[in-house]
Image (cartoon, rainbow, N blue to C red; front, side, top):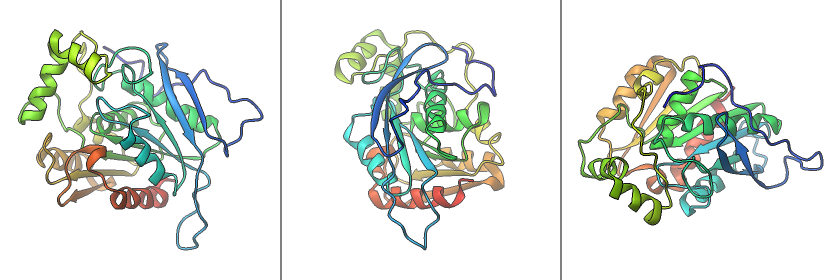
Length: 278
């Protein structure tokens, strides 16, 4: 499934009412370039003034969840609550997930979903945008930054480095879920995730290729040393591709993605983003 031309920034079809300010929580549906409605939530900043921190009033985090996640899932809401201490937060459900339309392409056309969310964040007046992605979302923020731009800093957590990886039992189960008709039924009715039946055509740019194209945008790669999906060669490949503009945090005892990122780690990521974005 091909994307639109690189460098073209997606625009949401939502225009906030003039009486809606950045201080209000807002839930709405954005529309991607290919017409998919994306369930999205804007959370105002809860930054408390602290002279030791950089100002966060113009900063917004756009959070890209992992596969089978959704905007209303508790772990996504917890991520948003922590990041709101450092800036405003936009969360959304990828296509095929939760209340969003369409079907999941497991990281391919999801770049369009993130582009619409970033455009919405800009429309709400935020000068600095940080994209933060987990697992599948981690690969999407890398490809979005490389192909689309529009982010002032990028945080990729628990991302694969290459496609079609089947080296761990969880990834073999995931491939069954995505590629088999009976697996897609489990995804639809058991996980509220509607998965597209078509193979990628063409195969998207890999996360490693994307990491090499992001400079000079600051990039943080975060990965747990107990990640059951992707072993440590994945983050190391991403960091090597990123070169000097990338930073790698290998977290002792951490597992995979949002569920494994505790509040202390999320706070460190928020501090990093506030200092490096713009």
